[in-house]
Length: 233
Image 1 (tube, one colour):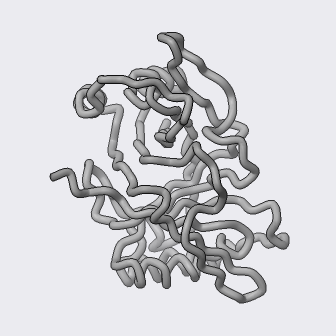
Image 2 (cartoon, one colour):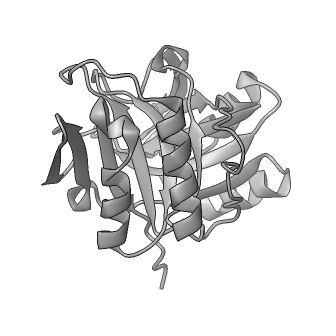
């Protein structure tokens, strides 16, 4: 079973001297952690919506919230219990909060298979975080349109894979406070715009924006374009 861990900031987080590299090495070595990367500051986010064929592009995240996604990790775990064990041992379970989301396989049809994006330095430059938007007019993306968007992205090199997530009702939140492990149901932030999927997008910012502006899910939801942080020098 695959799970995505959203590593989130939390003003109520506690200081920790734990080394995240040791966590990465441990779970990579066990074959549980498949990949993961930190993201640049949420202040550098670009938000995309399409409403009535008008493309709305704004600087900044979809909402002002102190609990924002700082990175992600992809696990191949035996079950939720093992995913919780992995998340609970992450330094950000103490310094922030971690949301566990099961991955739901989606078949978009022929020639739309995900491109592998394994390792600690994915080939893509950006992560597109797809969210619901309760304020948007009702719209159900046509599966054929989604498949065509994926195929176009594969042909152009913009689309390098993605993960569709189970509903936020299936999310598990993991935190450590005062040495106590806290496990609750629900997402990392109490907002109605919950994450439905992630897409790995390559190219420069202009190319990435042009691609996500054509995302069928942007018509009924929100797409946040976040750049990976790869400069560890």
